[in-house]
Length: 498
Ligand SMILES: Nc1ncnc2c1ncn2[C@@H]1O[C@H](COP(=O)(O)OP(=O)(O)OP(=O)(O)O)[C@@H](O)[C@H]1O
Ligand SMILES: [Mg+2]
Image (cartoon, rainbow, N blue to C red; front, side, top):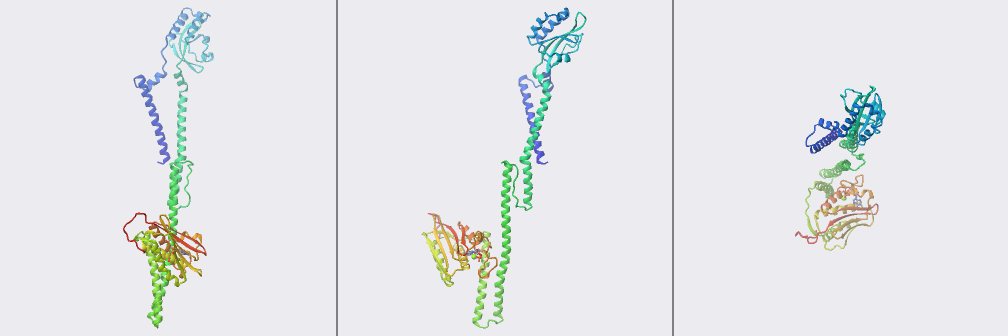
């Protein structure tokens, strides 16, 4: 059964319940008033039955019947008006008829209607009571038929207007019931239509859109046409959020998939190249091509360096996959950041001086800044940054500066260089895994594109953030934050210089 039919049935059901309750209340009220439960037949009778003839009506009938019996012609005389007035004042109407001609009728009655609806002459006076219509109003009559002295038929009638409610019901009842039913049906149809517009059609639209989502069509926005706020609209909005999320995830997956494919081909290339040359050099050694001690030493050195770079790549991959799976154990300790950085810079300075790069350390209000870090991992982050700067250094005067600035609850560390820099549009992506700006894999700048992705994961694990600023041709700064140890927070760990 579809929702529309269900709603319709619910509607009709509630209508039925309402009608039943109203009938029950009506009967209860009747019971309270009458002291008995009336059956529908009794009810009809009590409404439609003629009311008992009043004393006035009886008296009028007796008076006029007496005159008709004894001196019928008196009914045609002006004197009779006196008696007529007496009863008319009591709310009765009088009619005197001779043959088919109405000799007298009370002013409330309409003559034409009276002629049409007047009861038949009945000299036996068997049917002396009844109800007639007079121009739309019902009158109950008492009648006496007789003969005038010239033997012409005569009738005297006492009429009293019927109870207005019963009359109203008789006249308008059918029309009113039909009208009420028509209005009820109309309302049911209107409700059903509005429900259809507000709920069923939007839900059907939504279901089609969700079906499309299932089929992988994630692009079209989910909008439904209720036009109003409400649960269905909210539901649609939730689905729209779901679609956006799915779309985002699907795009990310696509990107990762592409990255992964590229990485696979890159790794194959990056591993294949050194392996090929290692094999070449080892064969050279084996076959005695390297015949002097000097040559042999050179060959061995090359083999050693190639193997080392392969080892780095495999290391990075290993670390990244562990970070990705959140399985890399962190060994946090509290250290004095300034000591750690000074030590780090001193270690690098010698190496970098040899390739003409000036590495300096600058601290801004760095005063006993204690941070909780995994020294090895933060070292990995800084290593990658320095190596990136070195790889992209293109100026004659080569400079790399590490700046550490203490804020209220964190330290901001920046590694800046005056190298090649990057275009603005690349800045967001360099932290994505396997992302490298250079499209062709250039051996002297070769890398997996994992360094900054690893760095970001590590900094996040430390409760900090990382970002890049760069100007193409001018230089790059990569900044990350490390939260400062809270005041009074002491876990008894050693505080070392790194
Ligand atoms: N200091 C910088 N100057 C210019 N470009 C940079 C700098 N640092 C990073 N990049 C760009 O960002 C990319 C991503 O850097 P990332 O360290 O993640 O990878 P990689 O250095 O290429 O490889 P890996 O670090 O794994 O050896 C680099 O390929 C480079 O294009
Ligand atoms: Mg790198």
